[in-house]
Length: 321
Image (cartoon, rainbow, N blue to C red):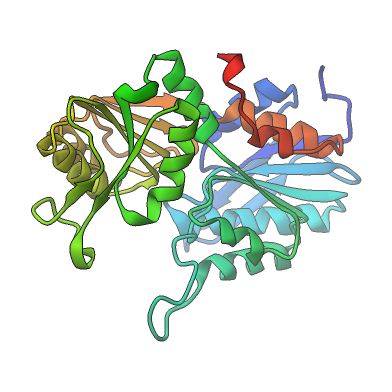
């Protein structure tokens, strides 16, 4: 089905044009025409080059590096659509930046996840569609509908197709905060779980140890954000010292800040699997593998536009393998 003649328009800003083009192809909704430029002092100017009056608008933008530029670009685009009389303004944010500051962990700290939610809402957004928030409670920071899609079913499907299932595989949380995510993937794969623990939050290989049995097993380390690579590289070395046969790593968002690729390569990880939620120009590990989130996001966009439930997209059936 084509949505070319429907009252829906899809726009891509500059954070991840390739993903936007995939979403457009999967949804049948052509990308709208806009121009974006910066003045010499860094101010952003956006011009929507076609009418959006009365249309349901979907704007694709991850707030990844450069985070502040992409965030402001998104806010300005929302304002432009609002002033141009769009019917609804829906934000498709595959990666939600500033989500890691979701609570006051010590005195006088900001809660930037809530601040960004307020900014998007006050700018005029009507709905947020995102992918694997750092913490599920960030959904509650919005006073508008916020759909948080999960990538674990995508990863489960990939690993089942590659026969990484059952008791020969152990899904490992590389830190205590990732237990729930590890358990979710383990349930899909019919595999046991283990945890890398560190005394006093000192996440160095010398102090870490495995809670669980990984000896002779294939290990899958899972986290939501792969940033510096330190968490995965430390956990991989600890798992190897505990007798793991081979190490796989999977993460929803591959930020790959400088130095991450080298750390992961030194750790000897067999494969690093991430979605294409973030586009980065920094070096990637030699074992990198991307899995596209475009079909999932495209399906969600269509369901939202047609007032159909998004909840079926959270489900996974092993019988589909």
